[in-house]
Length: 261
Length: 245
Ligand SMILES: Nc1ncnc2c1ncn2[C@@H]1O[C@H](COP(=O)(O)OP(=O)(O)OP(=O)(O)O)[C@@H](O)[C@H]1O
Ligand SMILES: [Mg+2]
Image (cartoon, rainbow over all chains, first blue to last red; front, side, top):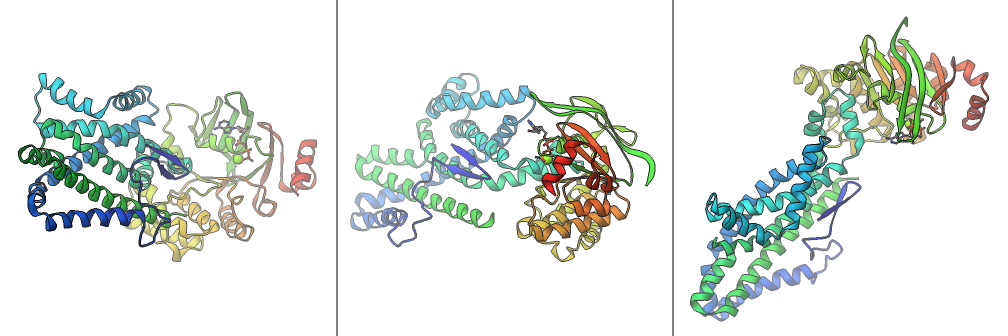
């Protein structure tokens, strides 16, 4: 989760490898990223059977993984925004509600939440698999993003709100026009990290037979019995995607630090 | 200056937990009057100022701006705040907006003015504070003195009848203090009613009609700048002035 120091957010989770101090040709990130790509290219060239077949089989799964991830992060951002606002609300009821939501979600493993929404609640309303997956992921990540929003909102200096109020704005006008635009800027990097974490966690939805990257791998492996080869490729593809995204987040952070004083 | 008070403060009491920030302040400020408030740290100067636009809610007592009660929970505080500008020690410019947007934001949001009209007013004000060439700059690109002048222009854009200044120059490097005080001096000459927390003696002598010395949440002594600075009566005032002069 994210902790805020002054107006910047420290990250203790998520992207690890990108390290701003490391610009050498052999930085850990480069070795891992280009190494993984090299292996992914070389394997099908050297051993077309089965690697070429695997590589041909999984792109649908990659798309599905992105679909789940992008849909979930969008809904999670909306839930997170309102949760964050709720967490700093002066209205006790709303504040409690937001806090309870965060605590409940954080206390239940994501896999259990997935099962609960698809199988347990499925007894009442049977949602399609993909919908269930997105609902569960959004619900879970909405709580995490809520904490990021809360931290981001609290990182904006008190004087900004006071100046807005002193000019005659209402609290909600001040939040919309002054506080939130600044908050969005501060929380970009941690939200990027949550996006990566969500992408990795989205592999859990394969349990619901949503044919994401992991599920496609499983399908291939169970018909061809090439478990080692298949899961090697799956792991490498996840690795390349997350390393690439981690780099983007790191660049975003760096740029932000240049912009602020 | 006409004799009718525009701000009336009656028995203002403010406690923060166990701290008594204000312990019964009575004060009336006339139209066009410039009042300077001095006093040691923690004496309640900021709290008094911030109570006038209800950034702090009084524990006891009443404040009026003209006929409008600030302390009455039912009064429309936003209308009152439109009439009462405030300038902060730390400027508090909106860091995601450029200079022009900082100034036009409140008129556009709160008053029914057109974009053009707001920009026109803003440009006039920027000229007045000597920053006509800075309208597209962001706060982080400005010096402290420039930021504070923009903050003053931002307040003036709401066309307030009273201006509150809470140590407007104490976060500034010495060479920038004058540019801000000059703007305030002009404002005073034009007849703006001003409540200023500041220890700038030069400004006080040039612009203040009255100096108020506060200590421990109370007004200890008040008078003309000449009276207070050259001939203070209360021992506490004397001690404080020796300390800062
Ligand atoms: N929000 C707050 N919570 C708790 N105590 C406060 C708060 N604001 C002010 N105080 C206390 O109230 C008293 C008066 O504070 P105030 O800021 O009005 O003093 P001041 O005269 O403006 O001092 P300074 O010259 O340091 O700005 C101090 O003891 C201060 O610690
Ligand atoms: Mg103060």
